[in-house]
Length: 53
Image (tube, rainbow, N blue to C red; front, side):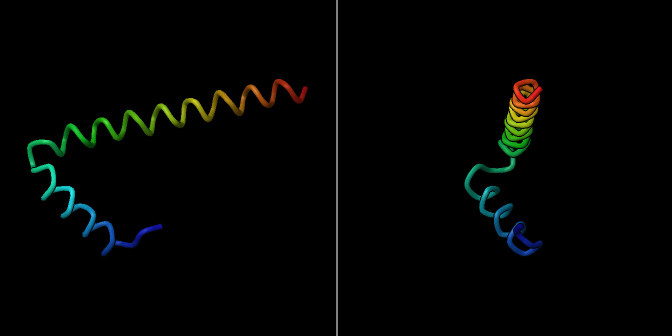
């Protein structure tokens, strides 16, 4: 897990690469992606539990 200093460096690099106007859009898309991955993981776990019964 990255520490505070590493997260700060990453944030500054993203800010320099994409600019402040794109940050909210990038964060929103990242959140949607994480939500989809969690949803798919949960569905796979449910499927494996059903197969075990």
